[in-house]
Image 1 (cartoon, rainbow, N blue to C red):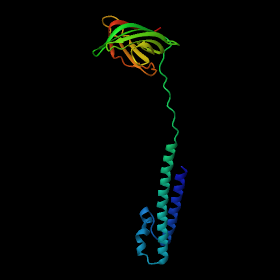
Image 2: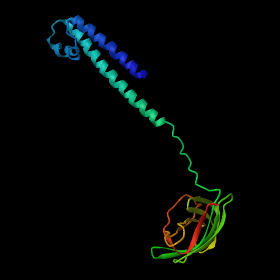
Image 3: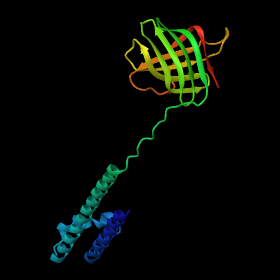
Image 4: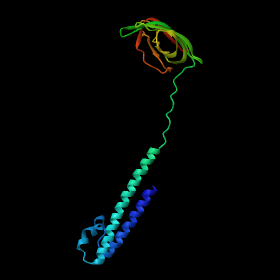
Length: 222
């Protein structure tokens, strides 16, 4: 704001200076065009003194333009510098969801595309999370694992993860998601998803690519 005030003051002083000199030369100066009139009429002046006055007015006008350009560049540079130096706030860490109550159990066969999987599990919320998983599928993969990383439950959905204890897979961790859609002939099929990973997984919600075709699973609220 100080730079704008300084520039405005300089422009006002320059305007008054031009106005006084035009008054001396007896030029009309009731608008901006007439303020610039010495630039137009300077070649018609024969009086040496008047020519000098017009020369001063030209220099003043050029000075105003130069000051405006200078301060304009100053403002651009200042604003750019401030933008570059603006503090970057650290991203708020996202805490993976966990539950302190609930458990899920099941023994199912499920299919996706032309493949199938078999999954037996029991998983419990709490600190520590606990449970066991046994898995095999049509590709030949199989493992046995312990639910010891996390457990999250929301409504009829449970997600749990842990470390692989033994099996023929190279990954060291697993993550399981199950959806309990109820029982009875009018109920939708239960759904499951199983993933193997080299890094410690969290229990964020994921999709359910496989549909249960045999067996049953249940997500319990306590």
